[in-house]
Image 1 (tube, helix red, strand yellow):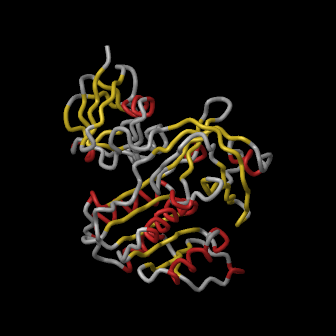
Image 2 (cartoon, helix red, strand yellow):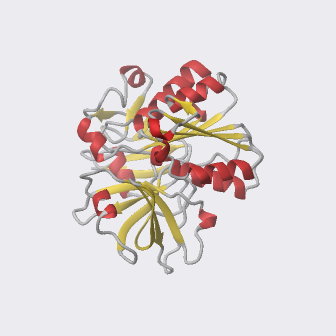
Image 3 (tube, one colour):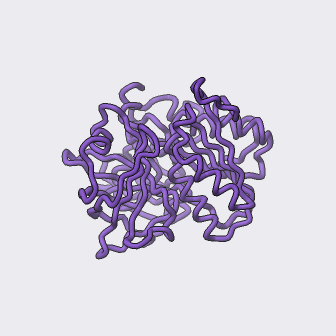
Length: 345
């Protein structure tokens, strides 16, 4: 026996087995529900249960609080169905849009803009028409079946010739995948991947001013959004806040500065939490989402696009709403929880 899940407002439908989570069934069926860790730790897969009953498995309170549960929110990575279910998950694409593909990719180039970040360009097979929205991501399929997620850092119109996606990969010492990227990976190697996934993308129906909030390599999909806005000849005022620990971690600082100089509607505010003395940093310091609130006390008429560490994204979501009046539906986010994050949580 299986249950039916309907996702609103996209009207996507899929089947789920009684012992299967709503998220895993959606991934299997190619329905792009939002998610991050798949382990009940980050809250990225939070959706509203509109109709039906689910069994909610063990999860961390920071991912879903009791108040949120009382409001009808669930974590799809921890929810198994007891009846047919209707979910509200805005941003899920309609049927037939940009199908999820499994495909090989060839390493076209490897660059190291900083000691622990690699910019990897992967050539796509000419025989498969891989399409995606700026802001979406792919999953690498490792030999043991494990998966690792990385966002495309180039907008779709900048795939180039030959077509290639750009990824920003931070080295996590001891990490199964990133140790390989920073050790053995070389040009012309083949990596297996699947995608596109994710509901993080630009709301093109809005003309509200934009806050682009990135932490660390969460800058990758934000970069793709800036490139898309430029291609659309947007005039929406936008400000990019990029938070990192030290100046060396702003691995594409010059790119961001050049974009802000080139695009009259874009401002760039780098924020460092732990600048090194030898860097003689004279710019903004502290937590990046607090820098946003210091500059923009009223976010009620804005949209926010946030990507990076789960703690940054969750803090911004909470504080922008509670203290700056940002409507919940105007906060678009992807938070990626690394295997190291899961182990330490």
